[in-house]
Amino acid sequence: MPARRTIPRARLAVSCRESEWERIREIAFRRGQTINEYIVAAALTADPAPAAPTLALSGDEQRRLLETVERLADGMLAEAGRDRGAIARLRETVELLLGETLANMDRRGRGEEILPLLTETFGEDHGASLERWFRKWMERHRPSPRD
Image (tube, rainbow, N blue to C red):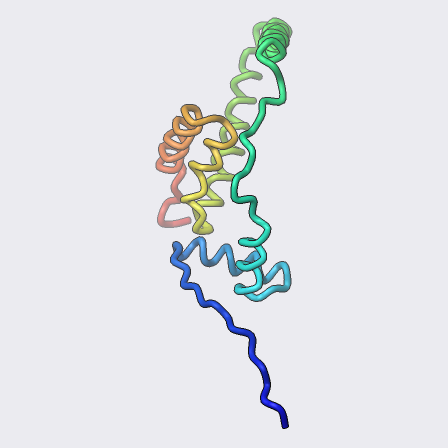
């Protein structure tokens, strides 16, 4: 019987946080791949030098959009009239939705993803301030020991 030829393989050790490893396992499982298959495929399909993001709107278009949004906000406030409580309730609702979404991420061991997500979505300065807001929000909304 002829000797079986083996293909030489390289080995690689990967170091990551436990939460990152869990996320890798989840994604590989969902895709029906082994962790090894998923990591190799991800490494081979990643763009090593992604193009710098371009703005979807020019500076003039951004200014016109901002002016339009400001006019809409002014109109909403004028329409609300004396019932400015509607705006406050809307703000509270948005805060609750954001806080609960981020808290859910934190409870599932994905807390380290919060700041990068907020920074990517809202920009570096505003992302950092939202992350600080969230940490204070968590202190106020921590479940009591009886819950």
